[in-house]
Image 1 (tube, helix red, strand yellow):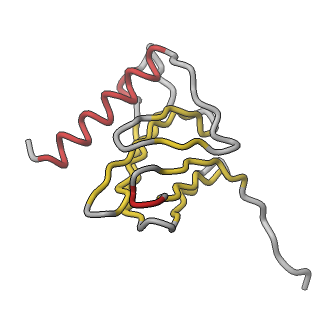
Image 2: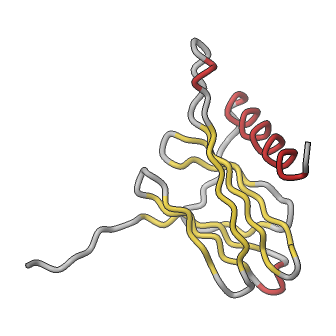
Length: 128
């Protein structure tokens, strides 16, 4: 098993444990600051998410893993998805969910902390 497979397995296991145990989700609507390897669990619509980052060559390497609710009657339908990004200090990236919520990850000074915030997407346009 290579390192990517190990990370994916551990992330999936972590999300599974969080979802199965019903641990309380963090409120990221006003933003939350995390440190390297400090995981945070939160809800994205009906799905549960677990995210962490690590300092990788002066950048924030963020990993977000999302899981559908577990149906104990049909556990084979358990599905996860994963988002990864390398973010330079002072910059941000967003994960856009199908629920119309964006999760913004902002890498802070020297990649020693990261801001995680839910952003509600609003459709805009001009009348034609």
